[in-house]
Image (cartoon, rainbow, N blue to C red; front, side, top):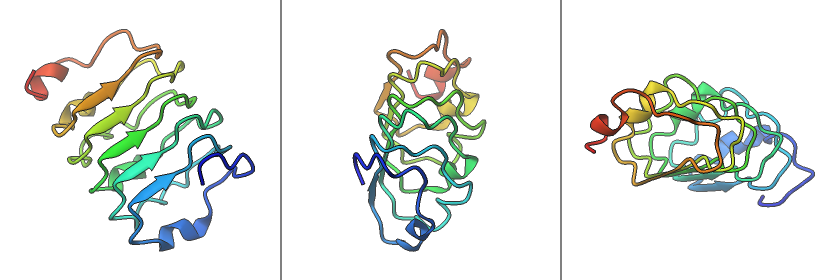
Length: 139
């Protein structure tokens, strides 16, 4: 669904794709992700929303993706990440937040992403990392 400019909301039946491993909605006009959309996407490994400039909020249910390895939120208009964002995303390896110019801080739970290999915060409004961030990741 990459580049589908007419797509402004996630189709409800996406949750029926229980074997889905990659969902790329990059450069679409998605504005909102339904709060419980991730509940049945237990096998999703890669979720890309890069360039969804109208997307301002990520639902807490995004943490219901236990097999997620890649999350690309680059160049979206998100302002915050859910408080418990990192608590259940134990397999997340790549988190792209570059170009999220309205993003000013990360939740403390970001340190729970112990499998994280790459975190891109370039071109964000983040000025500091949560206390103990590097220590929790073994840095």
